[in-house]
Image 1 (cartoon, rainbow, N blue to C red):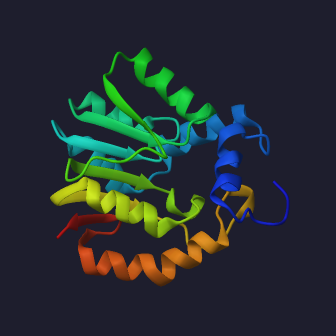
Image 2 (spheres, helix red, strand yellow; image 1 turned 90 degrees about the vertical axis):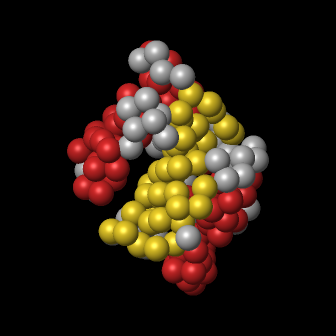
Length: 191
């Protein structure tokens, strides 16, 4: 990736479709390790205590959260950009024999379907975080639980885009206060 941030949705998606800007094997190892060992304690607790629910892993990465939910008899949908990470997640989940539904990032989400949504370190990577946050919001049942973490410092080498972060801070945080009740740090209940 160069010094200039991508400015269109297609430019951003192309980064995640081919991963030419980084060593994909090392990146996959890092994602799997951080998904297990460096996640927020409230996410780990949510993954352990969610059973028999309809769940969305939004920005599923390598599928670690989806696997944890599927192991608890949850009905899991994963959503990410079509590319190497999504293919890897599919293989990991299928290898374990879990059933899941997969959605490409451009597909519509069902309305009022999900009891639990995991969206960890995703919105700082997208072209329009408010569009994605509103998609998530519409897909959740009233009273549903959202685990949400959004980086607030640009890190271009990690694909954290300043424009997305600025949008999140200016518009996303007020949206969350209006439509969700914070239960604990990173855990929200839809009003």
